[in-house]
Length: 494
Image (cartoon, helix red, strand yellow):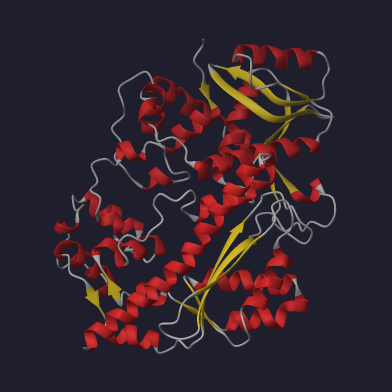
């Protein structure tokens, strides 16, 4: 079978020639896409299929069940038969292969449309359109227009989807034409390069721009687990500046190198194993709390295609919360929870339960309160009848992340982070998310977003149980962290 340089490989090569060489010659070194990345791919596929309705009644060149040569031949047949709209039209020129999301025969000639699930026009998308233009023009197809179709995030759904408002179309014909010489030169150099020795390219910002490279585990294998790249809030340019000077691990960082106090604390903790405790800071934080205490955590999902009335593309939709409460210090915890019914808009049901579970003037703790406050404020705007009660909850929220963000308690096990996923096992050994069926917010989001598609009732119940166990642990963890802070201060006072 003939080996083509595809448009995705071209874009990979623009990001890093070494990545392209590895992809073509050492593909087993790739890190397979995780569940979150697969969800992004699936979103792109679904958006692409929906966008076909902008140009309905076309003919599709099916991806499965045929070779690229057969796809190219099928595209030619459809064009010769007078078909005006082709989905996944496939072309090759100079051993470069492209598949066009939507190819439409306009009044002045053929129009190509590349569909993206993004809400903006990015440089990488312009490169995508430009290489398609190059191959189609090389295939002697008369191109009158080259455009990018993307999501309009200002669209608010009411009733049936209005595709002309959901999608925005940005014409890029002139830009693509201006890029043709550069595209041809890049393609030629890439085709020579992939048949030569692996290029010597060091790690750098290109490893994650515009996408995180799936060969990072291979190319970054020489970087130790604790390195300058882990120093919290150190500018990326400064991290690479240190790296290129041969300063990689913490021991090689000069004592004179300018780090802020928290960064210096992180380095010292890593090297010495010392635990840092700011007793006054912890006491000050604990002094802001009052009982009864409520520990709140939301889970949300988002959809490129708005599912419910009054929602926009990619709007965060809360579908679940967990709530622990303590009447007084040392009291037994009570637990409340809500999980929306899959396939339905969960927001109003969630709001009704939330305002019933949290009393007026309550002291509410969240971990990274910015998120919880944003969710509640949005709900108050969307459901004004509950706005007063919701904003009362909003105004009573305090942030359990604050003492850890301020490094009032810090150990090397926290790895410079104040994420609860690092803080919890560091402070409460044996308590953590490893081994759970759902162990992070991304997995929870994807599980719920796709739950309405699951037909097996037993599997639905298994997923719902896993969602509740995960969210419950988030607030249970907050209770345990507060206990630890109180214990640390109490122990230091005796």
